[in-house]
Length: 374
Image 1 (spheres, rainbow, N blue to C red):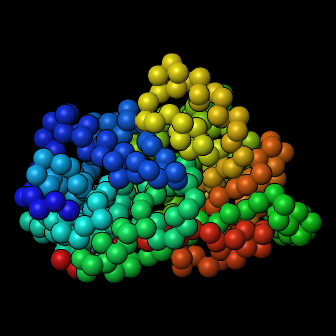
Image 2 (image 1 turned 90 degrees about the horizontal axis):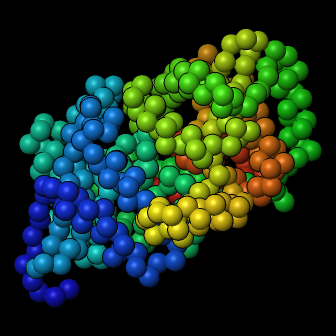
């Protein structure tokens, strides 16, 4: 890099925030796999009015070499995480950086200093901004675009972060299921076995006309079913409402399923078409031309991402998870989708991994959460 003064500046106004949001376009200028986020959505994500900010503190930094921007990072304290886990852990997130260790050192050490000042004893990340959103650093499969709401980064990021003393906290896996290798006959037999054991078990799709009532069921199941998972932090009512509001226009009702035992809802799964196929062509903007592109490229989506799956704790390990996966993929194939990504799956969730592999799924991407005592 040119020998100029390296400096760090906090984001203090909307102009700075737009600079922060637009910086990735510099990092990924010649990268065919990166998906540009919608700038409008990014502005909402960083707004002090976002539901996440009601229980979290965040600082955004920009690194400059002279007057040239060379990196960005966020420091995050989620009070709900601290309270739920009873540990003084803060996070870094939204990390983007040129390939220079002095820049990554400045960014990460500044967040560490900010967190220590506020009483934190450990740092984890990347969280963008939590496990309820995009998280993890891609450590392999850099030659494939990410699925909807999954991160992407250059191959040199893991080295920059590990050079600062960060170690692996947890790996998150993405599995790929394909129509041609989906074990239809075997899974039909599995389905029959599950239904024989649980004759009162049934699956139904989302009813968009009763969306608010359906959302109440999802809220109840989500925070119950995930509460024992590593890194879990409960979503507030406002956060779930906000997520639902953004995702509702993208929902295919047949790909959002509810499992019932008798009249009791005991599980749900949510899959969405991979709209990153569309975002790739919008370059961060959704104007009149963007809407035309959206409609055109939406028809070319052949992959769905199974992004949420939850079973109430008393009903786990009874085959209901597998039934929801099987039903989602069968219904997806009927709608013309050829592939499904199951992501993310914790590396210690061996049962779920074996279940996906039994359907013909293959692990094809790994994301890493890092940690360090501070």
